Amino acid sequence: MVRKKLVLNACGVKSLGGVKLFVEAFELLVESNNEIIVLYSENEFYNDLKNQSLENEYIEFIQLSNKRIIHPFYYFITNRKQRKIIDNSDAIIHFGNFGFKTKIKSFVLVQNILPFVLKDLKNTVLKYLITKSFESSKYIIVQLEHMTEVFQKKYKDKIITIGQLEETVVETKSKSGKIVLFGSKVPNKNFNFMVKVLKQISKNNIITIINPPKNISEFNCVYTETQDQTMSVLSEHEIYFHASEYETVGLPIYEAQNLGLKLVIPKRPYTNYFRSENVFTYELNNPQSALVSIEEAKNFNIKNSPALIYNENWSKILEYI
Image (tube, rainbow, N blue to C red):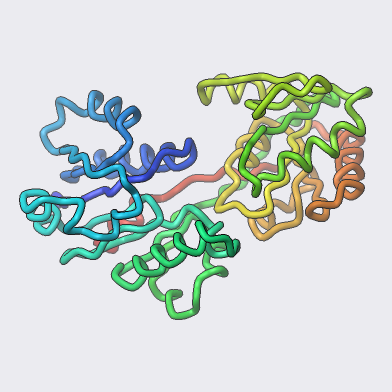
């Protein structure tokens, strides 16, 4: 196989989901015998990644400005040497939702749906930057099919979907009645709605919030620092409660289901993939509908249940380079 020279633009990638996605893609592309150049702006994580890659002569790291808003302006964030390195590569993959125009084949990964569904100033600016990247990119990478519905039709021929869903069977958690959810300050995650719903049943149920914005006396609040710690807490429960209005994937839903938890999730495009008997859907932002679904989940009893495994096929991208 001919070694490809790929630029991975990870500038602006700092959320846990975004970092996890980038690491998986990075490792696959390195294992596929490619020469990799990583553009980064977030010091803490990428310094760790650099330390793990010191002995690999085919991996190079270049730090660019951490002022994310100017990243579409190629000449402002790079010097002549950096531009030459980039322009002499085979392709560039932009992981932070938008990138910059180059002379080489360009891919832009969209892992933030909010700019396409919310109309506030921040998301309007982000939508403008992302769609500008669409125009200069050869391909648009999305994780799951529902993401394509928010883009204009003129971009549909550019889309590559890398998410893959595999069906499996897991052992369902015993009837402990324990409910678990994630805390969040992000309005789209609807954390306040979940708290409002669960306070109505907190006296008779054990309810755990993972990483809440603040302690809430009615609930068991747990703080985790690693993925293993988070999975351990999830596995101690029977029901996973989720309420986001929008998601690109909603990875915690897949993780909880694979641990054998029953799902109580809203009826949204990102949840349409879940159709098994251990999944209980409710009307978004409807407390009574959510309470009914939680009660149905508590009363449902089955030894083994279907589950979906979510994976990303980054080797698919190599076919387009």
